[in-house]
Amino acid sequence: MSYVVVARYLARPGERDRVLDLLEPVVTASRAEPGCRRYDVHTGVEDDVVVLVEEYHGAADFTRHCETEHFQRIVLGQVVPLLADRQVTRCVPVDAGRGAEA
Image (cartoon, rainbow, N blue to C red):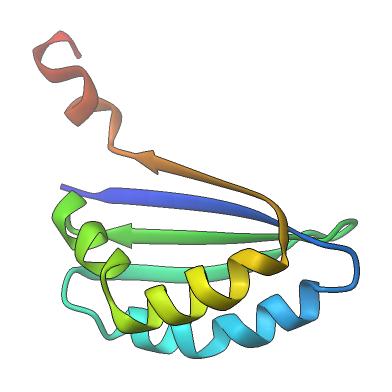
């Protein structure tokens, strides 16, 4: 199965570049985690939005990611305080979420 997480961060004015700098080591460490298929960072073209697109083999892999030192120390401890808004959406393939109805 595939488990996708889309995190949308709205940086406080003037903080987007700092957020991107802080995320650099997180990207490297996250991509090396067992169960991580993809971990990409995108920025808004016209605003201070930073979007993380993450893909894991399953929900348990994402849960383990959230328990890592780099997530706890950098994302929660340093990035989140620089944000005006943070939205995290967890996604599964349509067939997995609908069961036999598909």
